[in-house]
Length: 339
Image 1 (cartoon, rainbow, N blue to C red):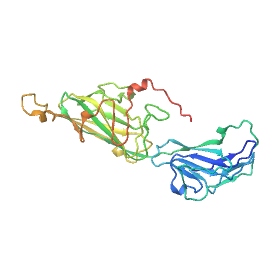
Image 2: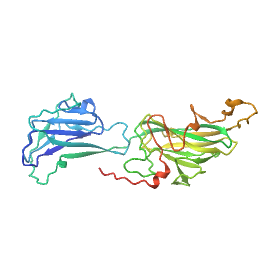
Image 3: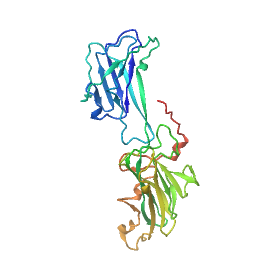
Image 4: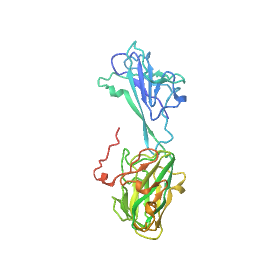
């Protein structure tokens, strides 16, 4: 998005030069980099050492060379970004030192004088030389994929029922620890687990459903919603486990549903099946089988035993993501969104 900051001298002495300092939402691409500006990631420094503004004079970035704030492709949909700018006076006769920042290769950024002037302002403050451009991002879809699997263990065993969610992008999906937390926000990354009837949930870091009402965790219910604390970026997968006990000898089926974001281009893969297949109990000691047979009844999900997933933690394939503990909600303080 193009923008054109302006500056005016409301003091009683002329400036010997002006430095424009920008903090952008993302590092600008090479095509948007001016050769008289210096770039270091999201930070941009544009010195104008010969622009002397007399008291009352004003200047603005030229319409021919606007500044560009780029919105990253993985930005959370329906979110807000900001581009900050500040003008600083430059001391006369002192060359500008860009440090590690590097100049662009595009045209010259132009700061043009304006015809109108400003009156002297005795209440002027150095904070008046800074400003913010707010960018309101439109809906940005994310392809969320749910992952289930098959749980194998003998009836009566206590094991972990493991579910997964993958974000195939392009957008990041927000976790619950954003700037304006509402613990049941449908845009947050979450997994809803419809529990197979052949197991009983004993413990989990997830919230529970009492009918259609989301509540703090309670054991033994048939539906839970697991919220991610941190954002889930494109290409990331999170796995988490619910501690369950098998209560039937018969196979049973449940469901896991991935949700979140401001739209999903492929909603058909938001749901996956969770299958529980009870196995024969391990033979008692002294009845044959040995150590290898004794461990054969443990549930296997993917390449790792389900018991590897500890209560209260989520295993992240790409990036550290946590699931919100229900107990934290009792003391969480709502944070301000003001900037």
